[in-house]
Each structure stands twice: as structure tokens, then as C-alpha cells.
Amino acid sequence: QVQLVDSGGGLVQAGGSLRLSCAASGRAFSVLTMGWFRQTPGKEREFVAAINWPGSATYYVDSVKGRFTLSRDNAKNTLYLQMNNLKPEDTAVYSCAASLENSNIYFPAQYKYWGQGTQVTVSS
Image (cartoon, rainbow, N blue to C red; front, side, top):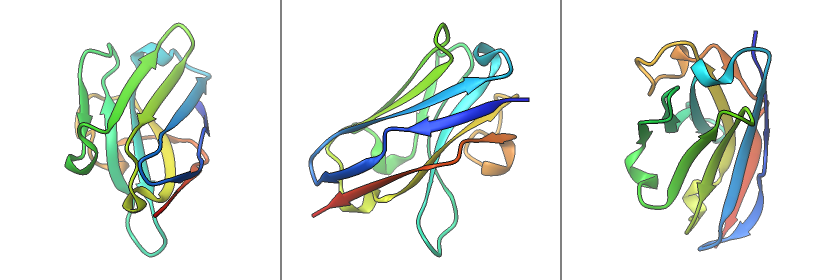
């Protein structure tokens, strides 16, 4: 079993930055593939970024490439999403997720464990 706690969301103006954190407990964090997804009302959950368990590979949706950076600290069991140059269209509830696999990382169904979500609001 894995418990995930998201934090770091908030209200920021366009062009600003936020850093989301996801603290994991309950299972060896270092063997988990970790991802961030976001969701707005009435829309399906959208893949944002993922990192494999060694931390050697990261994946991003095109709309955040060059602005968001995903990293993990296996010693602290924590995942980070640094979000720079935020845009109003980045507004959503962001949730971290953990998978025991390194495949199909773009799909929410691949992830077994989820954080509670943290709201990110970007004003224009």
C-alpha cells in the first residue's frame, strides 16, 4: 500500500511559479513510477508529467514542456513538480500518482495510488 499527500498548490498570476510536492509513504518509493495528472470540471484527467523509478527518464505533455520540471528525491520519498511561466490554462486540480510499472505511463488507469489533489489557479 502507498499513501500519497499532495501539496503546494495555490493562486498565482500568469507568468508566476509554483512547486508542487508529493510525499509518499508505505512502500519503497524508489521503485515506483510517479506521475502528475490534472483535471478541470467536466473534463477527463489529463497527463502532465511522469518520471520512472530510477529517475533517469521524464515525460511531459507537450503543453508544459520547457515550463514544468519533474524531479524526485528518493531519500526523502518525495516527488516535485516545478511549474514556471504558468498560464491560465494550467488552472486545474493536480494529483500525483504512483505506479508499480514503467509502462503506459500516460494513462491514469496505469496508476494504482493517488494523492488527494491540490488546486492550482492561475489568474490572467
